[in-house]
Every structure is written in structure tokens, then in C-alpha cells.
Image (tube, rainbow, N blue to C red; front, side, top):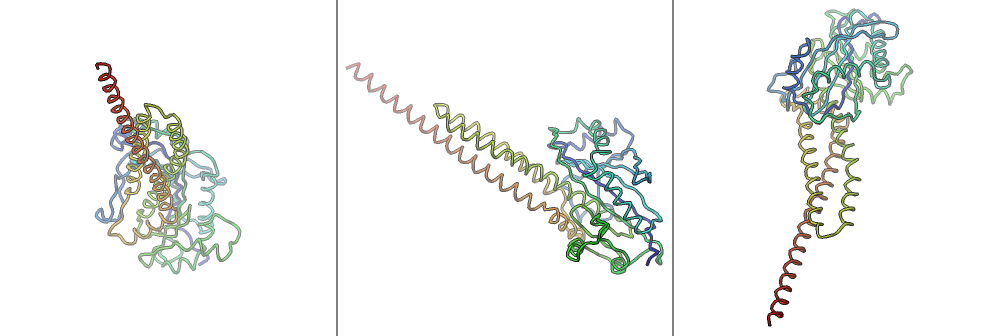
Length: 375
């Protein structure tokens, strides 16, 4: 099938940012409606029935003005959309439509988009788009932060092929007709058989004529029915990874600080030791409570229940992006802080008991001295 062309499809570049501790989505929707012409609405999956999935809180989808991109000498117009997540993440998506391109040209366009807007390419045009977005919804951000954490992801989507009857290919025929490895790897040189097998390992099909292939930072989706649910689920998984990375790094920085504070408190033993222990314990308890609440929101951002196919893709994406591994690291660090809080609370209680005992003994001694003086 040397004349195989992409009759309908697009390439999609995602960039996700950690922007705040949390986002009030209702407030953000109101602010956007009052200051910008683009449409804003709560996101939902387009095909999957609502009873088959459950958003913890549906993200807010926002339309931004399109941008023009120079992709290797070819100027294209990309539509721009954004999503805000209640747990503090914001995503921006650049979508370049494709029609009538040969398969090599389609792969070349996707790689050119990556070279233009990928993490290695720098901040443009993402910083300008993010600044505009956050400038409008700033009042909805709870404890904005500038952690600088970002994730990017690239998706190639095809709805129909030219040069074949009905525009459709079976997944088996598609794998035989085109080489997906250059699209999934971004490499121009031939890869080893082992590397090729690794890239193609995470692939899924539900019908005979659809196909999803996942890698760490790219995906290919062949979906003749125009279903965008898989792309939406992959975005949620990337948002979860981003925020789990944030809390992992936050706790990485907090643990040495906690050890220093505990050591300083222990070195300064005095009559107010119990109060100092209690104050530090309260600080650690507050940190554990806040991080636990927010990580639970991240974990429950999307629950896929009855749609087995989408659930498999979502679970595979979470595993591939190492979300469970990072989440487990966060849980371990929270456990260390909880244990420290418990130890400090016990020491504070012990210190108070010792102080009470000393006070009682002092009162008894005073009573004895007064009794002797009276005699």
C-alpha cells in the first residue's frame, strides 16, 4: 500500500503545567465567561457512557485563539484548547488538522511539531498561552505556585485513510501497511528489533478496525468513529503523573527540613519543650492532612468502571507513566512524616507529664517547708 494517505486526522501536542495547590473550577468558569470570548465548559468523554466512568471533578475545558506555527518551513494553523483540573494542573493542547497527506509526510509533520513545541524546543508558544489563561482565571487559583514542573505528550490521530476501500483498515492490515516506529520514537535511523518490540508492546484494539499504541511520551490512535475518549484519558493520566511528581518533590524537600527541625527542638530542651514539640507536631500533621487530601483527589481524578477497553488503556497508561510508583513513593514519605508526628506527640505528652510531676513535687516540698516553719 505504497499510496496510503491520511485522509482525515490530526496531530496533537500537549503541555501540562503545575500551576496551583488547587483550582476552584466554578470560579474559573465564571471568570473566563466574564473576560474572554472563547467557550468554557466542563469536559466529559464523548462516546463512553457517563455510568461507565466517573470524574472526581470534571476538568474545565476552555477554547483559546488559534496560533500559527512554522513547522520546518510549512506554516500551519493550530487550534488551541486548555483544561484546568481541580487538583492544580493546567493543560494546553495544540491541534493541527491533517488531510490528504502521505504517511511519511504525516509522520514528518508530527515530528516537526515535536521539534517546534516539545520540551527540548523551549517555552514558545506555551508561556504566552499559559500567561493569558492564568491572567484571566487567577482569582480561581488556590495558593498559586511556580514549581516549574511540566509534562509534554504527543499524539497522532487518524480517522480515515485514503487509497483503501471505505477509508478503513483493520488493525492487522494497518500494522502491515505502515511502520509506526518512526512516529512513536521520533527517530530517523533504524532501531533494533528489541527497541521496536518495546515501542509496540503497549497496543490495544477493541474493534477489528481500531488501534491504540502507547509509549512514554507519544501515542498513535486509529479511530474511524472519531472517538476522542482515549486521547482525553491519556491527558488525565499525564496530569496525574505531573501532580504526583510535584508532591514527591515537595516531600523530598520537606523530609530533611523536618529532621533539622526535630533535632533543633530536641537540642533546646527547657520548660517549654512540650509546647515546642506540640507546635512542630501540629505543623507536620497539617502537612500530612493537606498532601493526603490532594493526592486522593489526584488518585480519584478518573475512575473507569464499565468500559473494559478504556479501563485497560487507562491502567496501561498509568503503569507506563509510572504513576503508581511515584504515588507509592509519596505514600512512603507521608508515612515517615506520620510516624515522626506520632513520636513528637508522644514526646510532647511525656514532657507535659514530667512537668506536671515536677510541679506536684515542688508543691509538696513547699507544703513541707511551710509546715516546718509554722512549727
